[in-house]
Image (cartoon, rainbow over all chains, first blue to last red; front, side, top):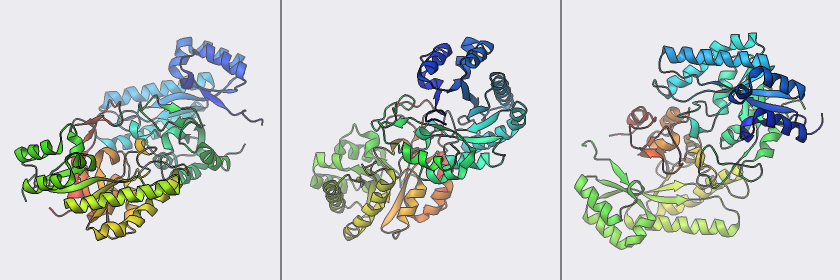
Length: 238
Length: 238
């Protein structure tokens, strides 16, 4: 396998592009994987998106995203389940074998209860996903997103949940931007082992202002990406 | 002890005030403790600050701040040591028995090495602080500050370092804004026990934009302050 053969570009890293433009860029740059986003797929229409990607012989590293499990009431819970199932249906149509989970922020019941809702929500979804040939990848987000996006903020939490399932059902997404600060990061990457289904790279600019938009290019920030990648290298077959 | 008798106002929460104005506000509001900041003390002059506080019969909960241990070279290390010693000298003059440590961001040697520099730096300072009757309080900051302000981002890390010393030498500052997201927070507050020398309250606004300035008033955010305070209540004698 040649260097770069497993490189995937996440559509949200270049979200100014339409899916058609992204596919064309991938062709020109010889990038063989794309990380798709549902809204970008929907813009084009799922059947056309599928045809476009197949024609370009692109592979899909993952579909973003399902999750947002914590709920305030039964109606919200049901809505979340339906939206997540729909995501797996779409993944199956596209031939995406991995759906990334952004687990959701704090519900009215509080932080601990919300974390339990995440574990419960994943357990509830697994059979449906398995039927569609889709694996779930839990992606812990940086603690600055704990309130509104993901009560799962460490690889430790992600591992604890994932380990209730087989690695074919539930894995882990390591995004260095979200987990680099964690004193347990190397230990938890090792623990996740073959459950790691994605390794997202970007960097953390020291002079940091906006939580969402302040990612730096790799090498221009403080994240020890090579060191993190090395732990991974011993775990995943090239 | 009456409710509120241990309430302290941190000068940086009302940094638009001079120290003279702060002391006057405390008098009017019957607040009996202040958390001082070196630069605000210096504006007035340390002797005048001391006289003002004594005259108002105010108590000093802590002096902020020493720390910033990670260094790129020997000269920077020496400068940090001297600045920290000066802080303890000032604390002794003021009669402040606690200096808050903000441990510092990432030095050129990287994250792990920087964390070791913190532990080494604290060990190096303890004898000097003890001679001046000053305790050190390690305050973990939120992981969004790991790059530039504090490589110590969890109570677990703070406890691990503090436990190398006696509770009379090194304690812990719990600032709910910084640690609320941590799945280990209750366990680690319990672990810190009588080492907890400060409990800082503010809140985390869900619609969060600026890392430094987006604190909310207590009750207007997502932090479970009462629940965190209850753990503390069992640990610290009223």
